[in-house]
Length: 337
Image 1 (cartoon, helix red, strand yellow):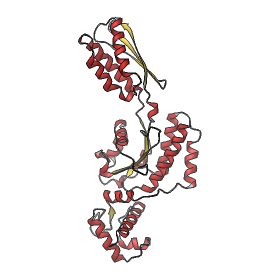
Image 2 (spheres, helix red, strand yellow):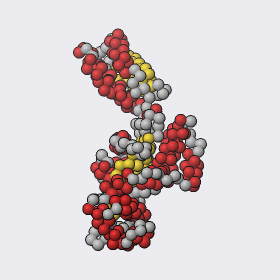
Image 3 (cartoon, rainbow, N blue to C red):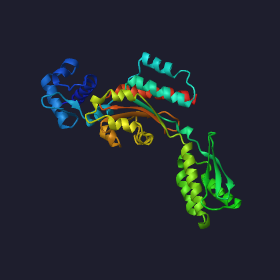
Image 4 (cartoon, rainbow, N blue to C red):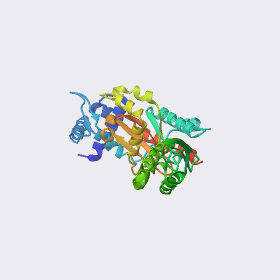
């Protein structure tokens, strides 16, 4: 038995099933693909693929469809991602030309990616928008209250008044400010919270209530200063693909509404040697994505922000990978000027 031929049969089954949504039989494979063998040989190959868990029969006497493992084997053997057509490249250029601020650029990016793939598209804000702490100021407005001001190196300023929980002198407030600033200066806002808690732990007992109140305020302000966000487009594409979700597309649609969930999803999938992150079905860390696949890639200099698409297991993986890679390249060039 030829292993390469069986992989060719698997590839043909994936391609036909993605195109037709119908289980694929041996006769159809012989008619549509130049496999160079008889239907009987194809049936034997399909039996072996089924034994290996790469394809399955959805019901008695039907053709076969790929399993999660079959899709993974197929994706892992994509050695070259086909380039986008001239029309697709022009679509990207037209829709991203003359973009304005960052928010406008990212909104256009996900719209064009959703249009190209027919999937849900999402993009994470670049890490460079998060910023690091340049300065913090504590201004006493009463014996029990202080104005807290955070200034980031990207120019963003956050401020708020906090109840100290005890009466402090100006010198005591200044001492706490020095402790916090010494520990937090130049740290990215994404890393402030654990260090803030360390300052509270090291504060003298007589100043601990005020230190804890200031820490809570600083944590809230640093959270407000972060741009850990995901922009999503193409939700209607997923809603129209409900037949591709045997159980329900509802959990995926619900998860797409949760920023924290989407950030976790993107952060937990790793890129392979091709520069692509592809997570299929139950490979996803989130149970709600057990019937979905994610194709994503990094686009910023720090390799910490991703864009990608989410769709059903029955996805055009080569086409999605090509579109995600191309749009990521355009977005990177736009942002780096």
